[in-house]
Length: 521
Image (tube, helix red, strand yellow):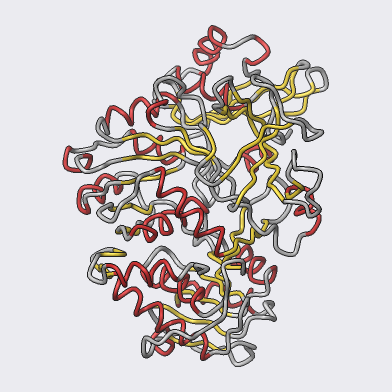
């Protein structure tokens, strides 16, 4: 039997209807109540005439209605589009138009900000408002509904979807151009949840703090991994780093996944014993965690297992490093997650030898359905898997990541850098992460991003953008002097730019694209 995304909630409710599923602030829904809420809204969406495969955008902060909307869209046969709540009206309008959204779920205050943009979203027919109402626009081509009007008896429609159908479109920023909509099937999401929950050893008594945006694949994975095993998810809208220890203590959190910039901030907080007592694992994704930060986190959480992960939105998750290997190879991104194969290949598709740099290629059930309405970029990133038997007539499509990696003799992978981020200076190819790691190890910086800027002599000169660990005593010359002692001369930054803080993307990563544009000259 094929499993669709909403089946995760229904199955957990059938097993343990009274088990806690979701908490937001002081409200907790059991799996039984969550299943009822999902079925109720799914019926409301069907009543609006939502058809199989039509898109429902969700532009809300993390709250119970956000999660309900996601799974109700699945139950109604639609495709959910989670929109990062940090995006501005123009960016939201682009996404709604790009994938011809028919239904928008948002809050009354966000709706007011969006009104002008929505006038240009011709496919939009219905807006559902959470937590309030709004005066209608006389000339609007869509109908506005209050949330309560769409949630009646808990009877979900029967829609003949299968696991190969579209389930979601996740928009991710590209290094150039407009955001790309990555299309994910039910199978992608279900297999991803099963795979990640298996190596994290998630179980029903886990309490997972969802600190990352649900519009980010790793953030959404907190829901699928938890619901796969019937665990409890606590929703957190990021306010201050100090809120994380408080929520961990209040809810006895056992699992926490973050991106490096957030981990750097979390490591600086005061962690009372009641906040760390129950943590069973902590996981990193979305970039390399500085070794100094990893060391500090292991001191804060001595009983928790560290999981270092690597993933692609185009394939959800790809690799993880088993905690037993962290001391031996802390710079490794590990090996393939269950039910995936990771290849390291040359430009001609042949496999690289151990120690030879190549492109990471991901094959298996997690490979997504491509980019929405973008055949050119889809053809560039989604290509036939290398090494297939000649007798197979139909090509298997894999994700060619664009990331340079190296595999060692024991099969462990090491991230070198994104090919479009590699710095080419003095005839060398330099990984930004190697320079950044050296900067972190000095203890003088809190954040660091290395960039290549055009230079007529060197090809590219290295610029290091940092925020100081201690602004009152920071000396850029002292940082350069320490880097000269640890890096080869061609890797030493020509210039260090100092900022109070570094800009972050809506997903919490350092915004390299913005920094590169600012320092291009």
